[in-house]
Image 1 (cartoon, rainbow, N blue to C red):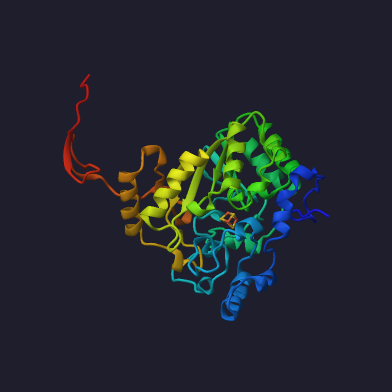
Image 2: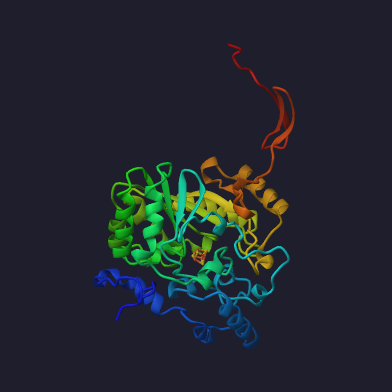
Amino acid sequence: MTTQLHDATTAEAEPVSDADTAWQDDIRAGVRHVRDLAVLPLSPGERAAAQEAASRHKVRIPKSYLDLIDWEDPADPIRAQVIPSPDELVTGEGELDDPIGDHAFSPVPRLTHRHADRVLLFPTYQCAVYCRFCFRKESLTSIGRGYTREALGPALAYIASHPEIREVILTGGDPLSLPDKALSEIRARIEAIAHVRLMRIHTRVPVVLPSRITPGLIAALQGRLMITVVTHFNHPREITDATEAACRGLRQAGFVLLNQSVLLKGVNDTVEVQEELCRELMYRLGVKPYYLHHGDLARGMAHRRTTIAEGQALVGALRARLSGICNPVYVLDLPDGGGKVPIGPDYVEDRDGGNWRIRGQDGEVREYIEVVSQL
Ligand code: SF4
């Protein structure tokens, strides 16, 4: 019997070859249920609290990702991302169930249309791993539905009737947790809409379940559309031989690879960790650091959020150390659907008409006088 991540009662089953099933073993051997936490080396108090937190936001950890945890270190950055913490049970004032306003911009089920030229499409609300910091945890918990062909019908009809849409962003849930057949079908249905040019896939799979990046999966995604895969590495310890091979496979298929990280207190909020992460992403994986997200207002996440001032100081230091291609843009996804805005440090000190005073990377302020043609 094979293990499918998606909801087996609704999604179409698909036979897979032996060569393509290592990832299923990885899922089977990992944490799949709250009860699986019992075998982890947690103290009785930690285990009880973790089980309560896991009952609010699902738990799933593939074995290979679990094996990256150093259990001797209670502050281990891999552990912090996936083992439920009692701190998640504390809801801070101002925290939100829908931190970036997905629902207010959802004209039909499984689609968010916030910006004219692109939409978010949610083929599934299931993931290969459940990250404790997830800003869509309420959708994953309360909806929990897998993929069906019918469920995407209204969303695809909406895209077909809006010629201004150029990009379709598959998100979720994790789209790459779906079987190849479902991915191929989704890609073909989007491809059939002539005005769509690019399909973007937001996924944690290359990080937490790299064995899922198989030739079959890559073939399922190849077609007319330009494909961009946006990975989600948060810490350099997530960069391994296996994740390197997964990214190489995606790159060699001709896909553009970008990474977005979330700034997480106690995980990746130092200049040293971010510097190593960004360098290894670019130099070892060939993945361009794209966004560094400031922590949004997801419920129960106050213990992992930094202040914006701390984030600005961090990215200011990064900018001085890293080449432009290795630098991510520090952004905040605003509540109520305001969208992502850059919130990095401001280098402009002063301006008088066309005379600007701008701080350089050495800290010195220099003048720049605009010289433009008056024609
Ligand atoms: S994989 Fe993405 S959608 Fe799923 S829990 Fe993690 S951050 Fe959330």
